[in-house]
Image 1 (cartoon, rainbow, N blue to C red):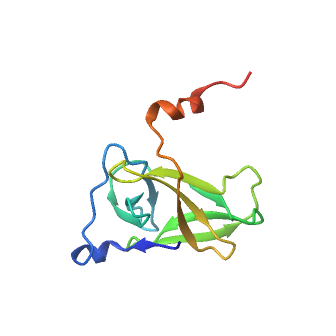
Image 2: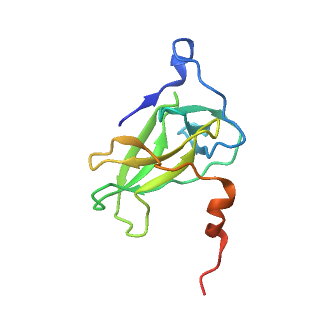
Length: 136
């Protein structure tokens, strides 16, 4: 499923704001403007202007042969750029929807197209606490 909603579509497709349960992340455009990237309950990706610190997001394609750097244009459109393969990069970035009602994986296909994939289960905060455990 390849889904994306541009900020200019707000009048046709009003969206929920990024909520406290959202796992949105922030990218920076070429002019230094920041954009939150989130996912709706339907799997539709969205961007919105932000003041949060930006992050670097690198995902491997589903065939695990290419690494992709996620980016954003100055108008808020998401982009992907092929980079040197990084074997340790994930193929999906899991994100809670803007309302926290669903969980979606953001991924990149082998030609750089973004897609979302719904998790078969809804995770609660306590069920993912294993992420903070140390490996012995």
